Length: 401
Image (tube, rainbow, N blue to C red; front, side, top):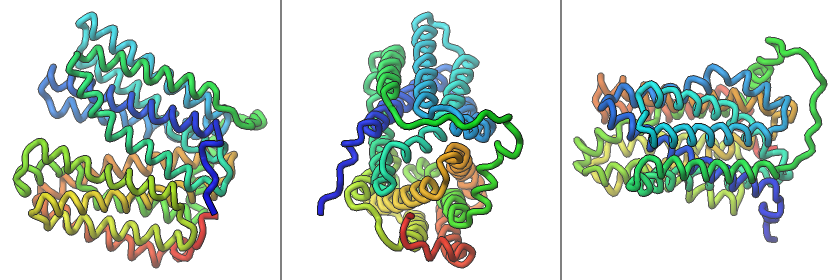
């Protein structure tokens, strides 16, 4: 029996295309901002600040952003955030054209982009369950991830090609992409019933934290991802592996960086076509264990081909984890709290990526890159085994609902 099509749900289709265009625009903007910053200052520290100023708003504003997502029409929030990014692209285009780009200006726009993303992510995650039936949500999550991965892979490549015509061309393209996203999101409709007016209290703002803490399967799922990525990530060390261990050049480094995304893209397409039906808890833990094992093999590998293969498999395993975790969080959470819970989940994701890069760098300084990745991979395997004992309800979970 054939699966019902997601694309008959026009509101979801609008959101899906808008997300792809928005991700393409974001990737292209950050490529141009990073290039201009490094070309101007030659400072790796300044490049790090660009990334930090995008992450800090997500950390500092997460609880407020989640509260807003549960009070305001989520489609309008995402559209407003895309619109703010379009305004940033216009400002960058104007300043570049006027030859007025400075270090401080680029750091300021990085902060603006981070602020937009801080409000966009919780609303965007909490919007999808309102646009498709619950039975189709895992497929919708997988298809959304496939589009996001494709845009993440294609955005830098497209931005780099356009940059040959100058930074202004990249920013003009960003204005167009974000503009189309806003127009698409303006047509997203769902039954939005504004909640009763009530004062914003500490209790209501922290409700998402309280919900996750008291719902052990969700706590197990989001904390599993946090510790797995925190320990097992090797992205920050890929330049060291490419140059000193695998003895490949910049082209090889590009392939190494792309391999996990390619694996994730292929897996997300497969999950959209054949969604997971049973034993989702054990599948989640198994996916994390496979991810950790891939990191162990990558750390020990001296072959470029083997390294590319295991990185692609790790990306596929991580995508299985992402789809199960996000579907479980959205299906277990009442709609009135989805924004606040999604905001907390976004902080977990962002913290694991940022802190994971720091952990990799710090451990590599002590143990070398190989020792760092081997220890991280073994740590991820240990976490999967521990979570099997600590969260038995998650391990026994059969279906997503």
